Length: 337
Image (cartoon, rainbow, N blue to C red; front, side, top):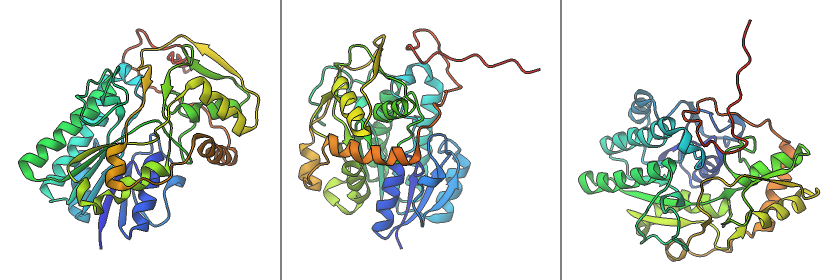
């Protein structure tokens, strides 16, 4: 039997990848510390281990026990904008944690290491983003993702570890953590509207993103290990058509069936336009009909109404408070008696 490790498998993209790996007949072990995921997102049939990729002793133990054929590494703290203010946390979780997995994959002769990177590696001024561009990440999150990409390439050249790197972007859909106020704009919008609050938009809302429905991303990630042409390659993956944040806000309100309410905050330091070219992925994985924004938002809205609004989560480990974006201020803890 094929045995696969899915890190972050209780999270958003990871839970969907785990589901599709099960459908392929894999035995699936999920490693997740539940910092951004939920046990009720775990698909039935996985073996769940609660823990962090940063715990190298636990990672070693799991590789020794299960002799994984494939590793799907989706565990990350993917708050791009927040990463400027949580640099140590970002690099420990997103870089050092990844290195722990790569070390064990080399030692245990894993057949393929599938890594979910990000279009954050490209930086600004490179649109549409293509895989042959030289990455110029502008935030610690993008830096950590690109560092892992480089480390995988070095591990392949030195030890023969096969890998596939995906650079998804602005993924949304069922199982997204809508209570996280630092990342995933569609989930943030839905959570606010369901609480009767206005959507908060940084700047004028004319920045553009291409929003990718989860199945258009999770299925190629799961199936890539069976496609030899994908090995040791990097792929942009996601939706082709960009929308402004203002356009997105209108669609979210429409599909939730509520009045459009929004408020604009000070612009934050972020890439203004971010969308990618996917011709390489279409060539290798085929070009299925993508889920359009309105249909995808409708599916997510139906799910969000079932689970209901969730309390926004505060990040308790802000390391730098200077220039922290409006609305992200650290709340002072009440003194205890």
